[in-house]
Image (cartoon, rainbow, N blue to C red; front, side):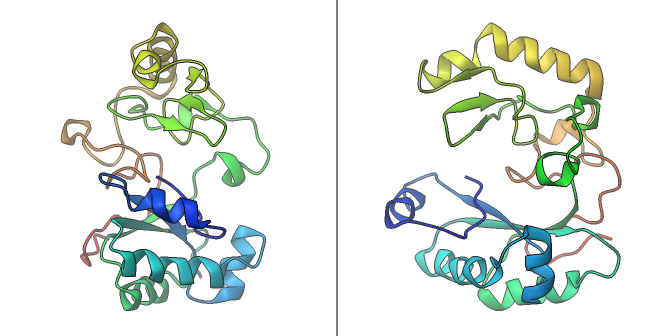
Length: 205
């Protein structure tokens, strides 16, 4: 489950502690002002506090440090996360979707091509899409149909085919055969110009 870890209700904490649930989030800097400049609000303190709470509760956690420019305090952010007890950390680049798209229309050719392969995204309203970066491609809603039926449905097949027609079959720079999928699901950084990928304290530059 992906969350910015800003506003987490008691009900959500209960949900996060259920079996087989894991959390993923993004972190931008150990410096509050630099982090907040990216998120557009004063979110650093709450995100950091909730990272610490996640570790304390024993919830499986993976954090992506999203590098927005060359001068960003990426190494310092990494050490800050380690000081909180986070062990699954990787560095990634900004994706051209959502806030990172700067208002541009989403482009399927910028996806990794692995969308919908063993994974899908369910938004807060129940809409299902092939991945967290292709949310403009709705293939159904869990409010209306069972998730299993949606994943096996024609709309999902057509969406996946359309994405691969634009993006290709490969996952760059990770290997499609490894079974990895797009962040925040597993340790894969598809797309163009990934800055780095690392897990459990081992950086790969």
